Amino acid sequence: MDLKKIAHQYAKSKVLNDFIEYGGVAAAIKTVAGNVYTGISIDTACSMGFCAEHSAVAEMLKNGESVIQAVVAVDNDGNAVPPCGRCRELMSQLSKQNLEAVVEVKNGIYKSLGEILPYDWKEDLEREW
Image (cartoon, rainbow, N blue to C red):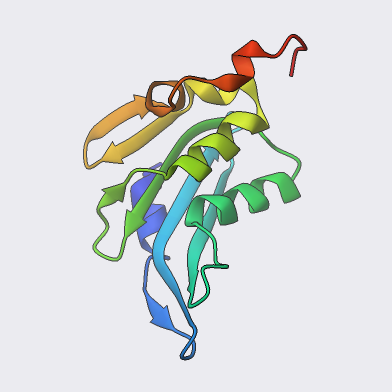
């Protein structure tokens, strides 16, 4: 299953109106259960949009899953783009296991989510999450 190809089929930037453009980035997440969830970015004039990874995470959660095996986001040309810090943090908070998720950060370059996060503040918490 080629996550990059799945994501690329949705990465088609479109202008909705003077304030919103969407689909410039698309993401595909494969869960440990083997399911794939996709999402697209929404860019707004007032910065209230969200990333493709957030959209895919919402689909995943809607279906009762939270543990990620692999994730990729791509631009209109199908090139892998790394998740922003907000997306990295969101995915890391869903499950501690997600720190092992494989992320294509650049075409052909793969890292674990844990490798691309800065110092993880959650490690200082005394409770198990």
